[in-house]
Image 1 (tube, rainbow, N blue to C red):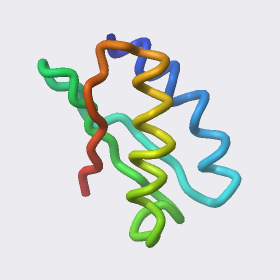
Image 2: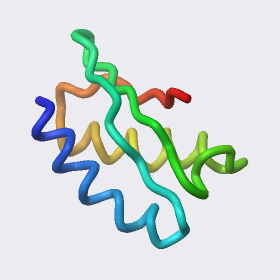
Image 3: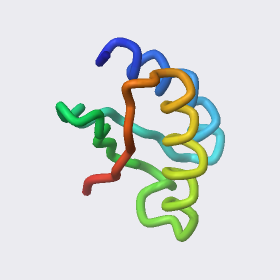
Image 4: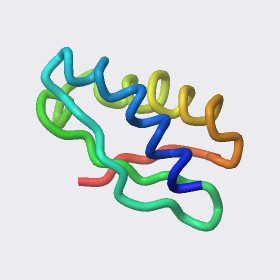
Length: 74
């Protein structure tokens, strides 16, 4: 599952980087929760929650069905 999540994040990354941000995989829990760290312009951005849930989480769930949720860590 880790490889599939990394591949999916690699497809999301260019969009985030275009706006000066990025995302990195921190952990994948046994329950399907993916922990990520938003960096650059995404870190602390008022829209980061929407980016996380409406962008990254939706995309990861569509690409990797075992993903149950995506959460940001500091």
